[in-house]
Image (cartoon, rainbow, N blue to C red; front, side, top):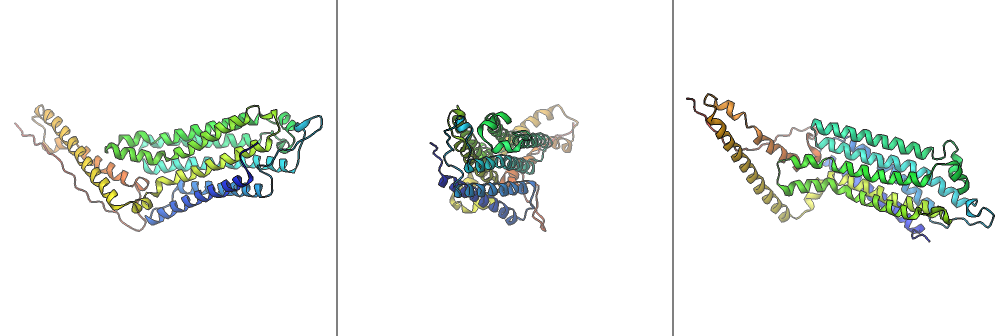
Amino acid sequence: MSYITPKGVIAVGSVLPGLASIAVALRFYSRRLKGLSLGADDWLILCSLVLTIGLGLTLILGSAFSVLAEPAPQSTGPGGYFTSIDHAMIVTEKIFWSFNLVQTLSFGMAKLSVIYLYRRVFPSRVFKTISKVMIGTVVLWILGFFLTFFFICRTDFWASWSTLEVFLNQCIDSNATARAFCISDVVTDGLILSIPIYWVWKLQLPRSQRLAVCGSFLLGGLAIAAGIARLVIYIQQTTNAFSHPSGIELMTTEIYWSMIEMGLCIVAACLPTLRPLILPLLPRKFLSNIRNKSSYTSKSASQRSVRERSAKGSKDAESLSTASETEFVHRYPHEVHFGIETSVVRDLEAQNEVPLGNIMVQKSVVSHDFIKVSKG
């Protein structure tokens, strides 16, 4: 007997799309609050949300009309449940077929949204190249599974909502396809979340700040955890799946956990963009302590970096008796990069963007140790 009830399906179909809607609304409000233009990442996550809301309504209606999470039909004929069919089974199979198509698009758009968010934050050429490869991978993933689910019974579409006997004879292995979809979904999410770690770790920032930045990107681990849970539960449910009449239960289980992952995926994709809304809610004393500690650590790191470079410059100066002071100083312009990288992390999602209709002026003071090289 399934632990998923019609009320549980209705709850998931309403709560998860609701949470996703709130996250996306706050994301757009955050952009407007800062005067930032909307990018491809924002529109992609909005499209994913629209599809998720549609699937949530499908779950609610399917449970309200006693279709999802209902007992599978029984039969006393010679074919048993392999040849039995009723209205609930037909409607569930149609919902399941449609759900697989739409969830592929929804998950794919959420993945692309995260990648395009990274592209706004990290403008380096190497990162752009890697992100393009990941975009191509996700697009192929979407097309591959969308077409696979669409032609699961080749061109005999009616077989998708027929008896189990017809389905097994006319269609490809749906359990293997669903497992491949779940596994590849988790793997691609893991790859996408790991992309920015290397570039964040290259920033000349205190370890605590780098960990905090990595943590904001790794919030997508919530979606990965839900995806792993769905995979484990689905494997358990589909082991010897055809040994007993449980068709509606199996389809409802996959739909149920897919909706949970879908909602968490959208929420996790929006969290890194909500920093301007979250910071004002934190206690002032807490923020002050963090800033003071960060400022002290950053200053120490900067001074240490300057001293090391100055010491290295002194050694080089001994062998450069004819070098000019200007030429020598230009060998060590790296102090400027430290300030730039610090400002980048202060507002990751808004890097290289200026509020519309405004001119952004950043004033900073950078101390340099100049080494004079006397001529002969």
